[in-house]
Image (cartoon, rainbow, N blue to C red):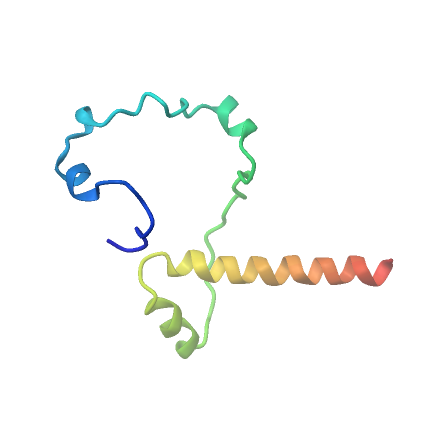
Length: 93
């Protein structure tokens, strides 16, 4: 298993257990009210289906990353927009 260093969890035993055998009683119920109390959760922006032309080497680069490559492209574009908006605000100050 990846990234399981420094843990006392017995992943081999856990892998053999059924869902019913795993005690989840200490996990809070996943409700809208719960989400409002958790830091780091933001409303997911509405997405729009479009057609866009992207250079083949760029698209190949992201596709090689596997499933979710379109979301990664979107994340890069979002980061660029946010950076540009911060720069515009700094120029006004």
